[in-house]
Amino acid sequence: MDNLDIFENACKYFLEKMTEFKEILSSKVNSLNNQDWILSKGSTKTCKVDETGKKKRCKVGLKYGLKIELSVDNVNIIWNEFSSFFTKTYLASIERISNNEEIGRYEFFARSSVGDEVSCTIYLANEWNILQIGLLGFVAPRYKKSDY
Image (cartoon, rainbow, N blue to C red):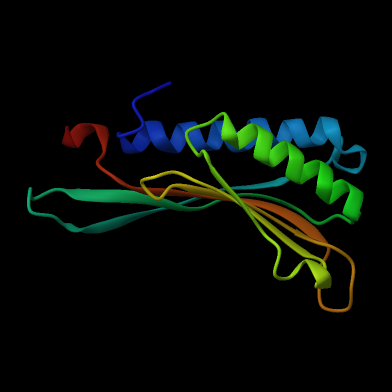
């Protein structure tokens, strides 16, 4: 594993892990196979200058998205894959938010101790939801390689 204390390395790592997870889902859930996911590489935000005179950066909006109808069975497969996959990564704190599942909204989170996060959000068919699945990544503030 690369040194994830460096901003560029962490961004590369999270994009690779999200891509790898998307590919696993495509092989495990038939309706996701051979679909054209939309990728957004997000944007870099710069923090205020700190006591060392340097600025940390974070990455927001790192995203894969797909508008597709999924079933509750698909959601359970995705949750099992999500918890299994991200437990083996740097993002070992896994959580399933069940508050909105009765209205067809499912959320899974994988977080690191420094604030990095990958979430998976699934909206199933009902009158309020646009059918979709999304993977969203956030890379917590870090210094660029050139700042070390």
